[in-house]
Image (cartoon, rainbow, N blue to C red; front, side, top):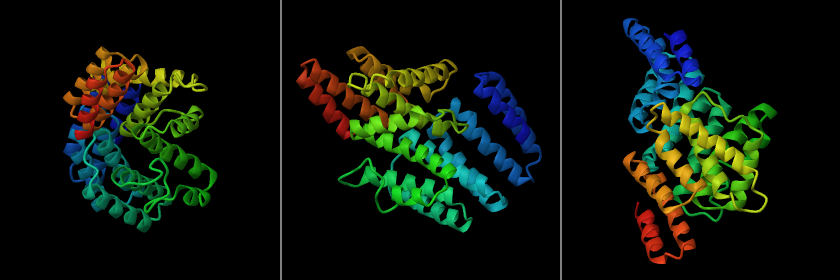
Length: 320
């Protein structure tokens, strides 16, 4: 089953979703027949959820099945990378779905941090600490919400202790989250700084939720800075992100459509493009993106001297 699902991932990467799903169904049916091999069964499902099915199904619908894979792997597997890797897929799917960042998710992050320490996986520990600091920066007031210098994660201190390879990966992952924060809090200097980090990084990742979040906010930030002096070069990376989500949308991805519409509104702002983006985000249940789209639309309306409608959309964004 694992060989089949791995081949299905390759097919999905090539855009052959129909064949990939058929291959996945074969691997899943085979895994069902050897259900007693619980480790193989859980690992096959984890790969399928994180690398294939979330190209078609909503992240929201896959969050709990992914968490179940983690619990199964934790019980029967000795593969620390699979046990902890399943939780990176889980948290990134949670973020992509725009689910509540309350005490429940913070508690799970603390538990998986402890598990990472017990399994002596320092890179995973840093990743989960970064996630928790990301959540804390969104939930609590701080003078520097786009920086990771808090209770859960102090980026500079942690990076100093890493070797060059681990540091490169950690910077890429933390930059992705900091870019989201920079867009949310509209810190143009940090957006530009993070986009420069990604200018030299490959934008591919086998984990669909990780790639989804990364490219979504790279594109939004790139188009958001499109008119700023010295930021003209970001348009190219923004267009690459737009093309990525357009390709997925054409393949039937429910996750890609609202992101594509929002990116298009940021690239070509108008009343029509923003209204389309807001409706798409609302229809998909992506409250976080709907709020951001409404806020960006309000800023656009101010430039159109429609202050009354702009105030309405700002208020609506805040209430979401």
